[in-house]
Length: 287
Image (cartoon, rainbow, N blue to C red; front, side):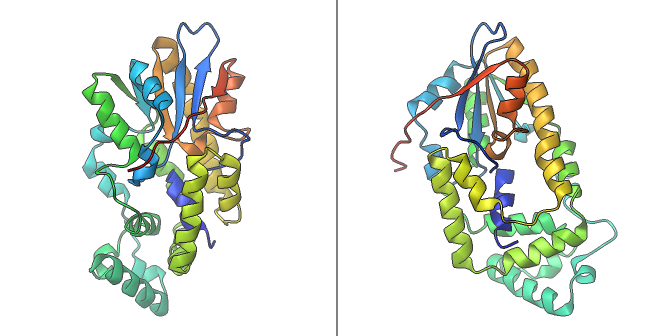
C-alpha cells in the first residue's frame, strides 16, 4: 500500500511496455491519414507541458481531439453528487484514533476540519489531498490544457468515455478498502511519497512505461479495481478510438496507464489490425 498515491495519480499512470514514448502513430487498415495516441498525466507540473515539436505537429494536424471525458461539458452537480456517500460517513468508518489522525492531516493541508469532508468517499478525499502537494505551475492539468487548445483551434472535440464509466470503476473498490487506502496512503512519510512521485515523473518524461510499472506494482489495490479501472475501460477506449479515427484524423489523449500491456489500448488497436508505432521526441526546457 505504501505507493498507493502513485497508482491513483494515474487516474494519472501505468503498466508494462517496452516502448520509450508516450506519443504513438496509428496507421493502416485503409486509413487515409494517420491518427495519434498520446499518454497524458493529470497534473499541472510544467515539465509535462514541455513536449517536443512532434507532439505539437501531431496535435495541430488533427481534425479532432478526443480525451477520456470532455471536462468542459460535465454536469458539475452530477460530478459532486457522485463524490459523496449516501448512508455512511468517515466518522462511522474510522476508529477514533484514525479519525483524529486524519483530521490533523486535513487541517494541515486545507485549514479545515475533517467534519467538512465527513460524507466524502475516501477515494476522492485521498486524491484531493494528494493533489494539493503537487506543483501548480500551469492553470490547468495537461489533458484539460489540450482540450482548451483544441477548442481554440475549432477542432471536433470528442469524449472517449462516459462519466459513469469512471465512477463505476471507482465504486468497484469497497468503501472499507478505500478507507484503508486513505489511512495507509496519507500516513506514508512525505519524503517517501515525493521521491517516488519524482521518479514517476522522470520515467514519464522518457516514456519509460516499464519503469513506471516497476514503481507502482507493489501496491495492493483490489483486483476488482484493476479490472474495472483499466482493463474494462481500455476495451471501450479502443472501441471508440476505432470509431473516431475511421471518420477523421484524431489526436486521442488518454491517461498513460491505459497505453501498455497485453490489455492496453495499444495492443487492443493492433488486434483491430491497426499499425501502432511510437514516435520518439525530445522534451524541451520546461522553463
